[in-house]
Amino acid sequence: MQDPFKYYKRQMHVRSVLLLIILVITIVIILIANIELSTSGNFESLAIGVTSSIIAAIIFLAVSDILLKDASTNYYAMVATEAAVNNVLERMNYVPSSVYPESSSPDEQFEKDHHQRMLESSFYYFKGLTASYATERLENHRGSDALCQKEIRILILDPREITVLKTNIKMKLARSGGRFDEDDIVRLANDKRDDIINCINKLYKVSRQCNVSVKLHKDYVFYRSELFTEGLFLSYYDGGKTFPANVYYSKYDKSKAYKSHIYAAYFDEFNYKYDISEPVIWPEMSISEYTSLTSKIFGDNAGTVQ
Figure 1 (cartoon, rainbow, N blue to C red):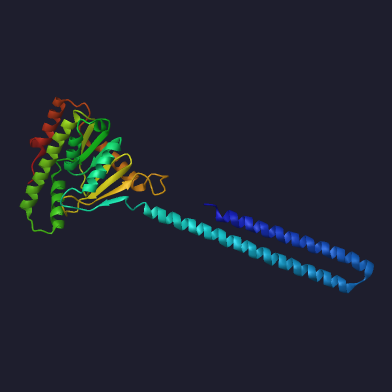
Figure 2: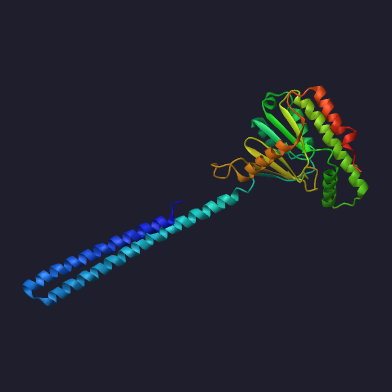
């Protein structure tokens, strides 16, 4: 976008030049008139000549002023239109490229699109609670060239974070609208903890064939993010149906020229959490290393929900 003040300065410069031209013409006319008066003494013709010249100068100035105002109006209209279009495009960047409704069974279109992103991407980054469905998908791709060539990073909740587990379960039960008590929370939290441990064991088997790293975060979990090379899947744990609604954001904004703010934010947030989280699986991890480490996490020291 051009600088409107630069245009205004240019406009004022044109006005100054026009005024200078008018002034020079008027002075020339007066000089010529003085010469004619000294030779002929005809005051009437002198007055008519000077008056007509001044009127012509005024008309010239008025016309030029109208033209400049029209040009100025058109320019500022262009600037305002460009600003409005940019504002709409910026807001459109927060609208997802695809939306998948919540359901009681896997959404067919979501599974198809997710599978395609998995095949095309050079990496797969997951952050969530248990990674149950992510683990199942990785197991289905296990041994394939497409999976083994990717960098896979999984961030799941530390099963020792009992308070976080209970809070998550309580939030889900409250939003489902049903009746529950503390015993329900404890039972479901223990089930969720077992799910996390089970996923980690399965992911270790996948890591024996692929480049898989798993770390344990300690965050309260309200959403699941899945990052690929070209986009991001997001879903929020709202306590509704078994499969929550999903949205997909492209890596690039609507202009295709810059990285999407949403993609960049979740990508940076994932990497930050990954860097500070505790590793539980890493590439080329031996069985003895895995057994020793997980016994400390999943054994008596991990505790049970009370």
